[in-house]
Length: 428
Image 1 (spheres, rainbow, N blue to C red):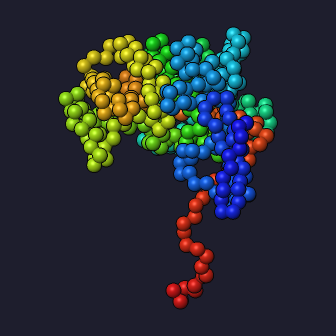
Image 2: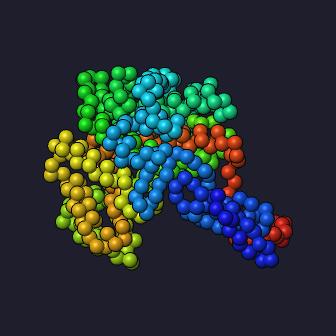
């Protein structure tokens, strides 16, 4: 711990401790500021406030670094698989061969959902957005699996964690099948995580379905890249919901609801809609001009990032994955992909974009990849939720197991009317 910082408020001098993490900037501990000085801090969006102490994920936005439990995301995406990443996020270290085999086995054999869930789905409209179905269905898991909702029981926490990692892909595939009017496809225990999900989404009973290994590997990589991202909006939502003691299924449902917002998980869908609006490569200069015009509200979606002020490390991996997928599928002369590739080329060379560090981000590439695989845009955020589930669970468990954990209760700067007396209706 570093030397404390002394601040003066009125006639009072307050010593505030300065904490140092294993990496990253020092943190000024203001926990006792109100008790000792009678004032709050004001930080809309929590851009300068650490809401928790965590050992899971570290981001250096200036350097373009993302670490899961200390491991660079590039190495995990290149050499590992998603379930190995899940084990890492949940347990703190990469698994041994025996540990990985056991973990994979347990996840695989939890993938089926209670058969009553199929009847539950029948209550939704056929045209319901898949994310609406996800929010309701994941929240409803606490009604189907109420033997793992006691947050104070370590065994129940573990069972709930395994169930959600295993079953949320099945629920997501069911949401897709229900939306397109096709029968549900049961999971198969001899397939890996990503292959199983692709089959549940795209197989039909009337013909055999063979999983394309290139697409399965691409989807597995997408899941790794989206597994966790520090204290973002949805993760903070999960932690805040969990701080009240809410059951884990309800907490993850709250995270999914937050993820649905277009400023968060819906960014890849927005990027794809923008590419469709541009239409053809010859229209790109006009949209670039609009983006540069300070008086024009238009923004290029899929460029830049709230945290990363350098190239998003996930985007580099996505760029290579996109090329692999398009090559495997033989996609040529598709206007959307032509627009995306030309826009990427311009953004990486145009001085305006380079100066402002508006590099293509992970959302720019992931939407294009998912479209090439055959997913409709309404499913993009659903796949994000499938990937992020393990990160939410790891963060939730870390919070629950923290002996210093308290219910979240942010303060406010009140600017409403001061105290006033009630006036009877007849005298107003």
